[in-house]
Length: 180
Image (cartoon, rainbow, N blue to C red):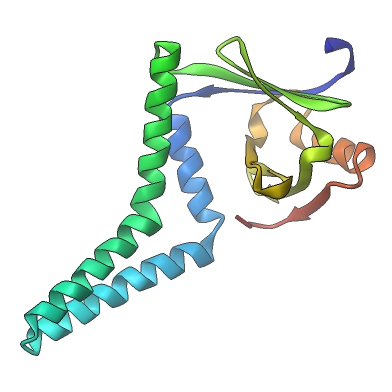
């Protein structure tokens, strides 16, 4: 399998990396941030206004709605990321490990802490998005996505990977810009 290795991507999977990843995903989705931030702000403003007008019950309801927006919009993603990291840390018995993605002519081979953790055939990939310092590879049928920090390519570069992918797999759409 190593003979057709085209590109390799390595990074240390730890809480610091995941925090950078989380902040990137928020920065790449300004509409999402504005929507949930706006709903939270409107809920808080309505809560304060209705309490000032003497309707404490309605103010509490608006405050609860604002809290739901805050939790759903921002804290839930942070919680899920933290939970997944803790589960993986328990599985590996340590707080950080190396994640490797090897890109061959036929598939993406994934490895975590020296153990095979997955394989994705190129036919399961739908599009590649260039998000500044990151690439986002989206899988078909909402099967997931793979975020690749550009500086973490160890065999080849991110730009070479994008060029190769466009030539080798033209069925995978490519786009630029911050999308999520």
